[in-house]
Each structure stands twice: as C-alpha cells, then as structure tokens.
Length: 377
Image (tube, rainbow, N blue to C red; front, side, top):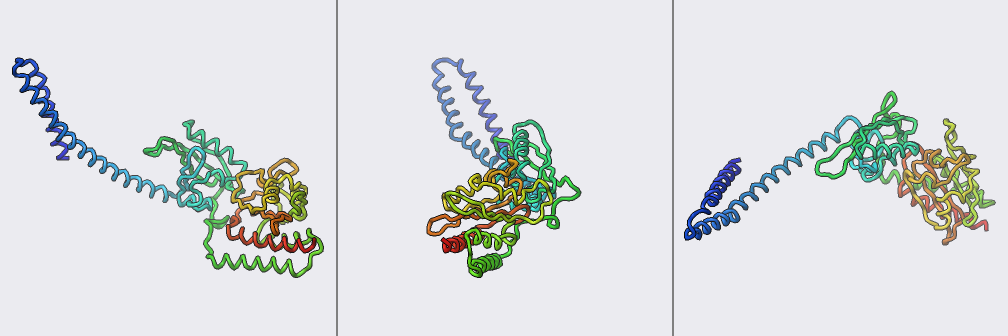
C-alpha cells in the first residue's frame, strides 16, 4: 500500500510538471531549447522510472489477486465436493465436468469414470433426449428447469433433476449445475441398489473367471455334441445367470441362424422384452451381430449409445432399451479366422458392467466353443 501511495504522489508531481511545460510554450524563442530539454528529461523519467515502477506494482497486484483467486477456487471446490446433495457440473452437451461425492454414491458411478462422458448416458434411454434438450435450453439462457428422469442402473426409482445455469469465472461458455434428488420416499442407497463399483481384488476376479473357464471346458468335453446348435446351447447355459442376464447364440456367418436365447426368468413389467421376442428376431437385422460375423472382432460396450445396435423387436422398439441393457459383449466364434457363429451377452439393470478381463476370458471361451463346433463338420 505504501508503494502505491508513493507512486501516486510521484505521478501527481509529474502531471504538475507537464502542466508547467505546457505553459512554458509562450516563452521567447531563444528560451525554447531549454524548455525542450526539460520536456525530454521528463519523458526519459517516465520511460525509465515511472513505467517500470507501474509494471512492478501491477505484477504484485496480479500475483496477490491470483493467489486469492486460487484460494477461493480451492474453497469452492471443497464445498462442492462435500455438499450433502448429489450435484454435477456439466456443459451444454451434458458432458460431466465435475461430480461430487454425494453424486458418486447416488448414481453408483465413479467420478473419474463419469468425467468427460455425457451425464445423459447414465440415464434410461427414454429420458436421454429430454435431458439433453432441457440442458441445452438452460445453457442458452432460457431459465432454470426441472424434470424427472431414471438412472439406467435403477430404472424403477424416479429421480428429480434440477438444472440451473452457471458461469464459471474466466470461462466464455455457460455451464449447467445439476442437482439430483430422489422423487420417491427415499433416495437410492446401498440397501436398494449398488453403490460405487467395489474393488474385490485382482485375485478374487481372476479366481471367478478361472471357475467360469473350468465350467465351460467341462461342459464342452463332458458330453459329445450331436449338432452345432447343441454345442451352442450347452455353452450358453454355462454363461447364463452366473455371467450374463441374457445369452443369445447365432450360428453361421454369411447366413446367420438364431439357435439359443436365454433370458431372465422373471418379467415383472409388461414392457420388458421377452425371450420369444429375441427368438423371433432375424440376426441379420442386428448390426452388432452382423459386424461381429463379418469382422471377427469382439465388441465390448458399456451403456450402449446406439439403442438400435441389437435391432428391434416385433413392436418396433429397440431391444437394448426394452431389456435395459447396461453393458454387452458380442463375440464371434472363430477358428483360424473362419467365423462359425456369434455369441451375444447382456447385463442389465444394477449389475456391474463387463470388464476388459471378462471380455478376454469370453474371447478365450469363444475359441473353445468354435473348436467344439468345428469337430462336428
């Protein structure tokens, strides 16, 4: 503060001297060189003394402001993370920028995984378009909005999403703050659904996959297959339930034929897709299956973005939406580059998504199944 006051006094003196020089323009012509020399001296004083002094004061003030801003930002971040309400900061395309601790528990999605992904992707398919539209409206300044949505992992629980515009300091575009609250009697918790993805340890996961591989090998070797369809059905029954909620097996490559469909035993909602719906499907109308049969590569999708990826049912509704598929594996049954069939696995609702390790184990089992089918040619 003292340096600022001193600089102000020096600047005021300079202004007074400039005023005196302006008045000296009326002196006799012979005295003008002296006035000119004085003016040059004052200009040198500005360039050599006052301007560097001003830059030092500006730099000091900026540094102090930046430090204060950083402390303020850290405080706000801490408050955001520890708010008792589930809160997310998203952009106009619903891409998550921040997710606080309460929102992590509420949605069952880790903050590190959610950041950079659309928040709409964690909602049930029917709610995604409405949520994106309302978010865009709030971001362009049309006012705060509120709507009821459903999380894909818990579609039976209505969630109230309140959206309000927010302009973060130093940023050109408006962000949207989303507050999530249960629209029912109580918020979803670990009692009513899964919390954050548990870390069970690499050893436990590896042991579970080894048990599955052993069960598959035992099933393929214990009974000699009579037909290729019988081999596919036996393999599907090993995977059904313990590994996937839905197992769909298609035989062939150029001409696909659906041989086995195994789904959940209970259908509490009439809107749920039925086993018969998938049995009546033409595999050639399922883009994922066709791509696997042609390309021979495994597809792992978590919260599939394209609802039509596995085709439509008889009513014209997307199968992935009606089955509430949260992750899927589509694996070609290939041997020496020749595809002999396609195996598609769905996990639905609150079940944990397929991991890369599970995809690799499924790829290994697919080669064993293809080998068992090839022996019947």
